[in-house]
Image 1 (cartoon, rainbow, N blue to C red):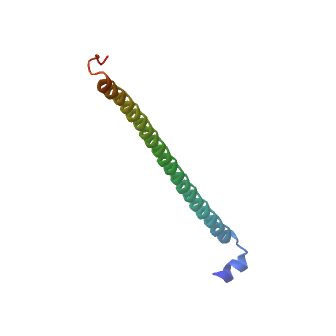
Image 2: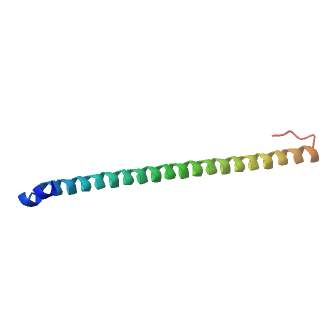
Image 3: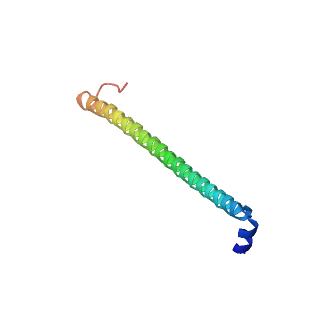
Length: 87
């Protein structure tokens, strides 16, 4: 077959093989790019979820701290002056 291609000087076979290899390379590159984009999106979503969870935990901590301060003030007021109304 190689002898036939040399005699006819037919380069279509080689150009079609080269084109096929290039097309496969582009498809592989596209799959890699898509995979990288998916990984980046997943990482960004995980970071956002972690940030939201940390924010919620900070808000809960602040709320509990404020409640403890208020309860402590009421308890000290009751201990110091048990006859005064609470409000």
